Amino acid sequence: AQQFSGINAVFFYSTAIFKAAGMRSPMAATLVTGAVNVLSTAVGVALVEVSGRRPLLLSGMGGMAVCALGLTAILVAGDAAPAALCLLTVCASVSFFEIGLGSIPWQIGNELFPPACRESGMALCAAVNWCATTVVGFAFPAMQHALGPYSFLPFAACLVLAYAFTSAYLPETKGRSVGEIQEALAQAAS
Image 1 (cartoon, rainbow, N blue to C red):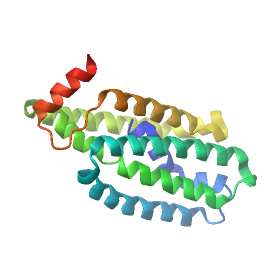
Image 2: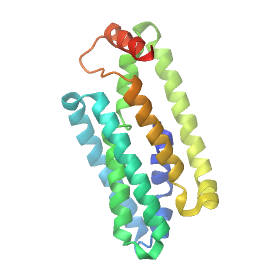
Image 3: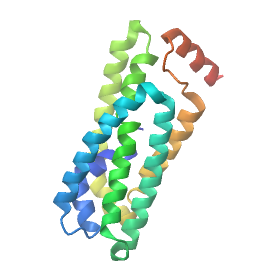
């Protein structure tokens, strides 16, 4: 879900997205997005031990889904939508990513895998993550060509599915041992 949330479509192609939305200075908007990314990462790190992993993942995915739908509406509206609204929506999406999908999957991965297979499990997760990043990076221009202003709808759908899956099957891991987490996962799967 991390890469299929559309975050790298935003990061890799933000200048083109801002230009399509009518921003007068798309490069400046991209710089603002980067600054929001850094600040939101700090907020996410501070919140994870206070709020727990599951609530942050769910709020992050839910917020990103709303932002993907909002960005779609802005791009569909074209010149009728204020260009600044595009920047605000993208920055909100980046913020939701950083408090949820940005860092928490890496922390949860370490908490879900038993010690005997943790290194291999996390290495596999990293490999899959980078493959997904590559797919999104290369596929997004074709998605834009095929779907036009609707190119963020597939990401919204992925986020909704990830939200439903997380809501149904992922237990809170904060303050729990690997054994307790494994037991909670087995209960959720049955």
